[in-house]
Length: 344
Ligand code: IPM
Ligand code: MG
Image 1 (spheres, helix red, strand yellow):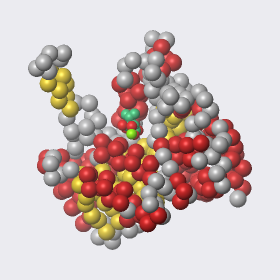
Image 2 (cartoon, rainbow, N blue to C red):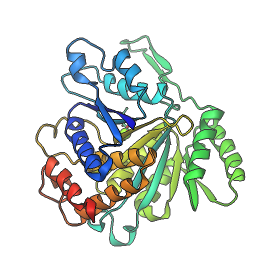
Image 3 (cartoon, rainbow, N blue to C red):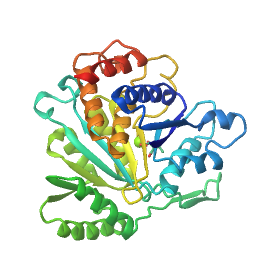
């Protein structure tokens, strides 16, 4: 029995996570997964409690895997609180790999012209615990015309090496490392050195490098050229929104935050709480459902994961999906459509 901590969070997260659980159960995993739900996000904050309490954190860290929705609520003015919940989980559980696959399930979902469409099937491997996200720095002379803000970009040899090795381990053909070493020579230099060492350890695979600006351009020009893209925290954040759009938009993109050494994992759709869409039954559950599939694959149920992914692809191809991807179903109906195709 695997203990799953479920954290729907706010807004759209509360609508899509139940659909993911519905699909996991329908895929025959009800007996294998002990699901326990925890409250994080705006509701506790509005009661004057922390968005993620220490006691919730202590319980969540015991779980075999975490299924996360999204956090963010316009009623909470502190814009940083959502990041604190998610970044605390990523950092304190040392979930150093952020996996963001982009697979085009139906040609009509591509925004690109014919030639650049198929078959997009790439994986962004984003470093998830360092870089510009560590929160080092400060604001000096705050609120005055002389104010100075510093946000440090922290890159460690250990952190960079482990994410590069993970990326090489996932690739069958090629790893593309993305940085900005032409302008940021210190951090970029460390990435370059670690990349040279990693590619020497994996002589069987092709390895190439792109600056992040060129990578953004190449992803739009011809995304089919990429297999595994490995990069730092901020560049991975930005490029994975771009790759989400290449496969139909934020509604369909899944992600996994992993520590391959401890086995811990947190799985979440790439989209956020979408306050402008939440509560109307229109949000797309596919990103959450595919994140659920990634979670059970991580737990050793590879066959069920494949069935879920195939069912999602069939539902999308037959137009049985939400409006953002060209269908007319509501959130729960879109979840039902995936359930319907599980047997195929
Ligand atoms: C993501 C999100 C987060 C990030 C935010 C909410 C802090 O954009 O998961 O991509 O930047 O990592
Ligand atoms: Mg993001």
